[in-house]
Image (cartoon, rainbow over all chains, first blue to last red; front, side, top):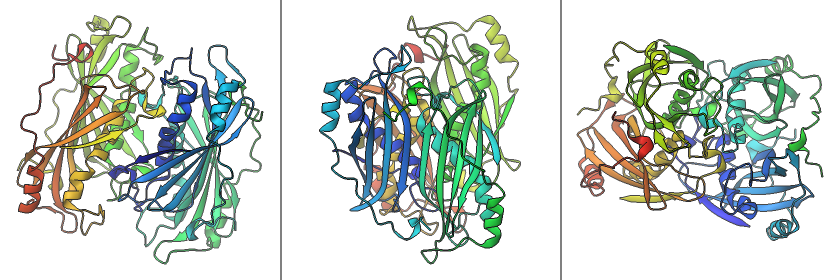
Length: 147
Length: 147
Length: 147
Length: 147
């Protein structure tokens, strides 16, 4: 697990008084830096060396986030495949789990324009950060959506 | 279907030369305004009148988006439930489908803190914008993730 | 003058019910695309061809912007120098001028790492969009700051 | 002086490989939280208690910011007036000053719709964070704009 803390800003709050859902896309992306550094320690974005491309992201908003308190972001690996892997992330505030997110990242050679297998050493490094089991979170009132 | 067009900006482009994935969260949110207006035509965000809360969003990046060309956003309703509904959205550029997205929106009474059934007239209005069937998009090379 | 219209999104609204000040940085950047196209019609961001770098931006918030209405962005050239030029921009909503902004853009050769004179034909093109005189806007109550 | 550190994210980088200018608007806003807390320690954005409105922001980009390294934000007070004050801010990376910014903040009563004098105790608190003299920064090559 990687953890990092973000401070909400005035403009992250929306007209209803909550941290806006789109902000989580930015926060979780920032919290994926340690994963990116497994593949490219210097975060060099040149097409010659960068090997990752985002294929899917998702966000489950299970509790409200507010302006006043810091937010802790937790980042895990949920699954490692041959050519892609899944990052699982959480945003916590004041001891409450507020957002669960996933990102499917594909291993890709930009110069040749083809997906490529994740090297064995990178797989092993990713696997050190596996979450044993993603928690099923009982959703609070506003977020009971399976009606 | 609702359609609207956005113009990418310099800062929307990331270090690899593509529109960054987090930008889509903002664009799709903007394109949901016509859906929001079904419930509150004046977009008044007061807790007394606003009735919608976001429970889930997801994004499938099936093609690259670039700086140079306008992007067309298409917004449909995929499902209408008792207390929530699902918005399905697409981003198109130069005739190519580049992103598919979903947002699960819950009908909620902020004053009383409870989910409430979607009124019949709102349901009927939503159903006018149903997509018959969400297309299964054959993913391009970088995005083949079911390895 | 170049004009373009943007639709505010739910998340652009801050906790006080106004469009957040940071959103204007994005909107004005988008509205500078026609200026950028004078220098690079295809908006190709390669270091070989792109010639512009941002040295200064500023924003005067003279009226409040709200969620409900479209915003018209107006873009002019205020000054053309030897190696830089100043863009002047306005955001209007419902007939009210709400934000005035400036951006100082430097003509720069990224490959050689030096500022370079703006070519004569580009200067002439910029000068077609000069604003005769930037209006002094009487500020509304909240924004009278020369106390 | 208040200091805080931010971690650049993948999407903060623009197509030229630098942190995009619009990102600084967000970062500096976040770094103003300690100033906001002088006026409202709980950051409660209710119109009944919140007293601050943004009248002006500006940014001088004096050096390039990159993805790889953390950014230190430094926040000072430059001037305290009767009804408004000026925040001065800097963004540093790897020992280099990269951005200087200012924000003019007005003391405002949202309920009554009028500017109001800054209370004496708040003034005294602000003055504890005064910068003696804002440095004149010799600009690097790309940013010599006084041609």
